[in-house]
Amino acid sequence: MAVQQNKKSHSKKGMRRSHDRIAKPSVIYCSCGAPTLPHAVCPACGKYKGRQVEAVSGNEE
Image 1 (cartoon, rainbow, N blue to C red):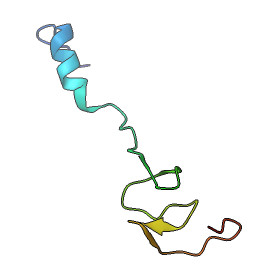
Image 2: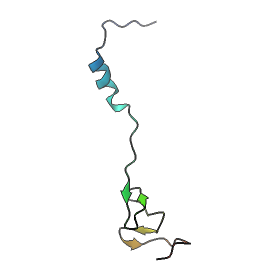
Image 3: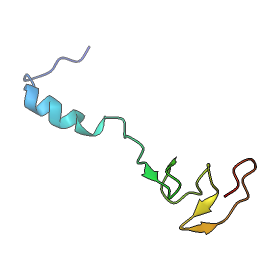
């Protein structure tokens, strides 16, 4: 079994683990107010960059 030569400090351990976190997904809000992923069509109204891209059933404006 491997044995460490010198003890790693709390600071060095934290620096090593700084990239191990889980990334939070970024969220933007459409003009209709629904949360949406960036660069994606709004699932609630079907718009992308202010243009109607998809027809959404049940939610007519």
